[in-house]
Length: 164
Image (cartoon, rainbow, N blue to C red):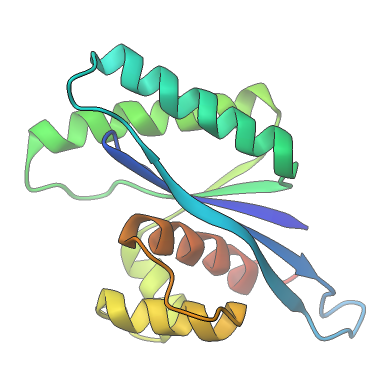
């Protein structure tokens, strides 16, 4: 099973692709492998429509390349600034559209859920989450930038909560 994790944003959308092999049903020890992670960055000088188009295009390319079984996305549940909430919601909209166009199921997790599942503490610092990601995925270094690490955490959250 391949899981595509997404941390939505208009300026930077983080993504992380994880492959999970084995399951509790087959009594094999599950194995997790990080296939790819990074960020889709957009230029603030571009019109919002062009920025959203770029996010959609790159996400569609990632889906075509990796053929994920599921798309796990960080849900938007609280924003201090309405100016930030609207563009991030628009980015999330094109992310959901890309998944729907490719008929990929979508699951959402709040940041609190993700931190709780990954570290056991819902108020964990980013560094704690990154260290746990590094351990779980056997990475050589902490995943960076933060948006990409967050996307890997979303994907890992799915693998841990949805034991298949």
